[in-house]
Length: 163
Image 1 (tube, rainbow, N blue to C red):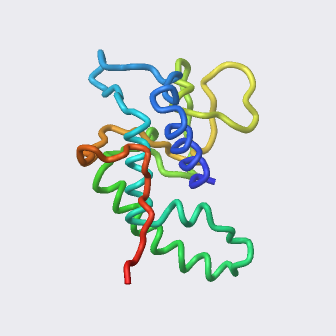
Image 2 (image 1 turned 90 degrees about the vertical axis):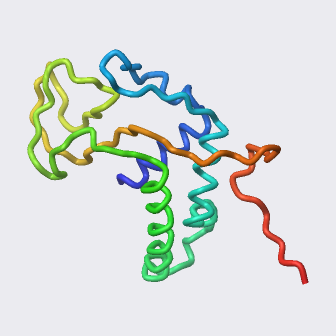
């Protein structure tokens, strides 16, 4: 489930650029970063995920005909490559420091852009529940410079072996 949420946010950002963060508060007064990303930068991240983990190829592939073991074996390489991209280019930290599946109290005045409630949500906070996913803040994105003249729409170039 967490993987699908992460992909959902990634593609929301890819499609909408900065507009994907329109609900998120800009908190520079508190020393937290604002983002000045662009659709080109989202495409660049997608390109890095493709180059290092073949993520686009995997997501575009119809895997319904493969056995779970075959998919699992392929995912190891994809995971290794994509994690390497995140480790190299994106500084992340959890929204909630508590471990998953542990009790957690959502206090009055919480920011709904940082904590998504589910289950039996009635009345007013505080709410007592269980951490299903810690969430992620992006503290920094350190992308390489795009080569001058390169088409910023290309997430992955076609490859041709010349004989």
